[in-house]
Structures are given as C-alpha cells and as structure tokens.
Image (tube, one colour):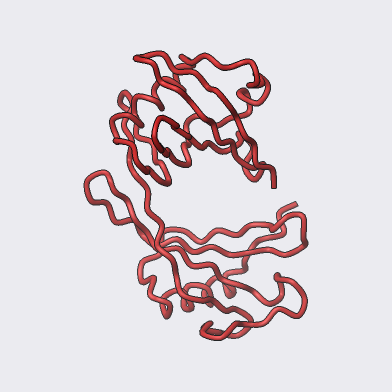
Length: 193
C-alpha cells in the first residue's frame, strides 16, 4: 500500500516551499515511509550540477504535519507554509565512476583514487573476488553491486559500501584486501534498519 502520495495541491505547496528555500530547479520530489513508524517524509532533489567527475545537487527534507509524528512542529529557523515546513537544504556530492561503457555513482571517495575505485568496482561487478572464511555467501548475494555508496582507504584498509538489493533493507560495508589483481573480502558488516 502506497501511503506516501501527495495530491497536486500538496505538491504545489512543496514546490513553492522548495523555491523559497533556494531550490529553484527541481529534479524530483519523492515521498517515503519512515518504517517502523507510521510517519512519512518528503524529499526534494534539485537539478544536478556536473563538473568533470563531481556531481552535486541540493536536497531538501520537507515535513508535512498530517504525515509526521503527532505533536511535531517546526523548529527554530524552519520555513513554514500551511501544514508543510522545512529547514535549509543540504548539498549532496557524488563521484562518477566509469567501468566499461557504464557510469556508476559513488556517494563518497576518501583516501583512494578514482582509478582504484573503478578497478575495485569492476572486480565486484564481474564477480572476480575471493572471500575469507568469516564471509557469508548468502550476504554477498543480497548486495546491489551496481550502486556503490562509497570507497574509503585508511592505511592498507579499504572499505567499500553497497546497499541491499531490496531498497530500505539497509546496507553492507565490506573490508577488502588487494594483492595485484586479486581481491579478497576479509569482512562484511551489515546494517539493518
């Protein structure tokens, strides 16, 4: 059952509120259920700005009184229009990775080159990796390899994050080791909402 659906009139208020909050060009307005509660949320995404491999866009979380937790009210600094309110928009950044002829987006790349990320992602997508004894095959089958959350390298430790294949089912953080072209998954952590 889709409970998080805005009427045309409600959408007009969200658009107007977003414009007043600095998002002049809107790419998408999405709604979502905030499980396990009965609350629902609204997310406005601005048009993407692309500079080379870097992508950035504004994101505004809008609260709708009828949809949110009972007794919720705007906080100091929020802008309110009718039953809708929002704080200031945030900026999200992504890095474009190219593997073969396809482009993928990573939420964050820290301490590691874009080329290394592309090489690692290519190995994951091709299924060319080994794993240690503590890594469960069943967990690996639940990972959405085409949607990397981020890549992090500290010293010799490389961590790569991916979401669960089922949207809203959490994400995985994999610790990997590279030895030439051989990649081994040492550990896998799963975050479940």
